[in-house]
Image (spheres, rainbow, N blue to C red):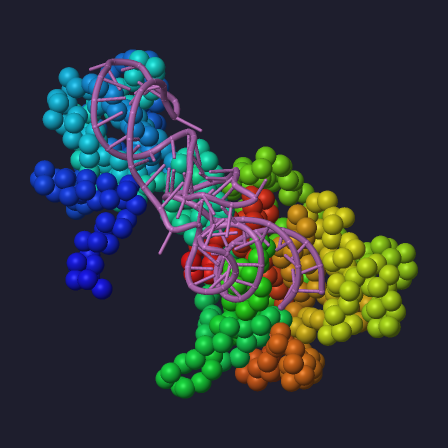
Length: 502
RNA sequence: GGGCCUUUAGCUCAGUCGGUAGAGCAACGGACUUUUAAUCCGUGGGUCGUCGGUUCGAUCCCGACAGGGCCCA
């Protein structure tokens, strides 16, 4: 390689024309004694504050107030003696800046025209006025570069491809209103959830993400390694077993907003890392969990939309208000098949049903899994509003207490909204003897090659042996709650979803 | 894991039945003191995902690989 290709100069030569132009403008600013990246620029008001304070001005008037504002240049129209630009700040608020020859003089006007590109962050100082067309504007007396953009912005009027939106969220946030909205909606929902828990006297805790054993859910974990102990560790798939230890310790109402990691598929509704809330309530049962969940969802909807009727981004409305319908898992499958399916229905009979309805059976499925698959295949799409599905097979729910009346069924519900599972809740299994048997059965499944089976956590069993109160447990996907509130896909609700390297 | 589709300018996309490519916006030069995706005149910009193969010649045909999407398991 020639020496000249190593010193960086030729790398610049290889850049697209527009990036070279912007680098040259950066150099020109410096040569002109102006900082392309100053440590501070004048700013007396946000664009939003200007709009709030001066938004009432009539057409073509001067406010008499001089302010310094900052923003990203998203439109720029240079004419001979009067130049216009539109500035936008992070929440999407925009304000026009005007550069009039008789206000700023030829030198400042020319510098504005020649140094500033779309995408640059600038500070503009001048009087707040309205234009002859009534547009609220800052009529510049001076301006300063706040940060020179070396890359051009994408076209505002053509939607970015989904891939670019996800890979370059920083650009997406600049150009797409929905991206800005969802980014601010999520923390608003978090605040609402915390406030809902606080009003019910739940305590927020943080439990380990690095775990020696993975448990609390059926899922394949990510493996990692701790050098200090030279041993394998897992990223958690659920916080459940630690939160239950809290219950044993007397933290009677507890919740965690937790990031979980599951080493499984990644598609439009599954992300390898995802946020959940999990909560436990001593001396409650599954029905208390349902009440809590409905409260969390409805209070989140109300805090965002001012109503339990939520407006999706595609314009569709979804009513999350009132009480929600409840259906029995086994009854609804029986109804759909026109033949009774119960916990005691033989495995062979279930396989027969599955084949009849065109469901291809994975031989690894156990009895209860087959019932759940039948349910998902036949029933889910018939739901209209939010729906609690009540009563699950015991063999797929190793952490749940048996139903107090129905043998072979556990006190577990799933909440479905818009066709996907939003939350689940149990009357928690607290009997350490039964729990040990269930976990041993899981360990045997694991030994037989079921990669989703839970490991036997002796310390968790020791905790149960100390005594855990009867408890209601609830888990809800935060990303999915955002999906239910907005109608968006999971990759839209997560700011930076995992993507393969380019 | 299997099948199908896709990758071309900064962005969004056309296109070439095989002869190295276009549009809109963006950029560059010029005109314009009220623009709102301004308008008008002029100009430049591309390893057509990567690597191989076929061919006189490949962005196009074939294969492998990589990224993305949809469907199935």
